[in-house]
Length: 237
Image 1 (spheres, rainbow, N blue to C red):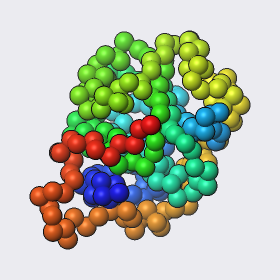
Image 2: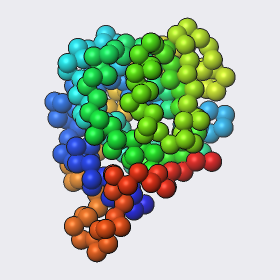
Image 3: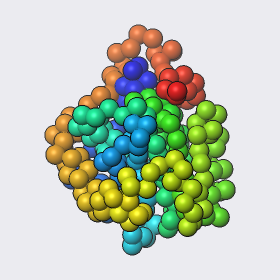
């Protein structure tokens, strides 16, 4: 809990000035599909698909910090609105359309903050990570992320070639969006549901919630921060 509030305070580029109606955020919603799927797996896991939206936008318009801010807008909207508590989380990243030009837009200092918060403080039980439609760019992408990935998380990562059905060994096809051969509804409708949920929480987001005032801490030398790299509180079963 300490890390949850303190790491958010240390990442204002992600957790401050969060207006879901801001043009930059609205643009990210058009460029990226952020899709918490409506149905759980048989194990009770919640699946979250994220990918570039089609048709793929100009990578020069892709801003990493704005993307991460929008990603956590959806994540926080889930925390506030979902009444069904999953027993775990399954992340599915679709590399289709992801190019080297997108990779060059990643801000390394921001990536470190994102990885630490996601692994240490985000209130989910991570169970699996799937990378689908892998491309030759995978090695370059992993060279950036691998030093920041905890060993337990690395063991959860599975890679799936384009056109393969190996994801179905972990995630039932029927809970996937229609475009993937599933029955969960269209990508457009799923995304619009969560976009509207974030927008409906606009006043709450503008209040800068869930952020510690680290200036009032008396133990600043021992304050959990983005540079300590401890990964202590990752919840893994």
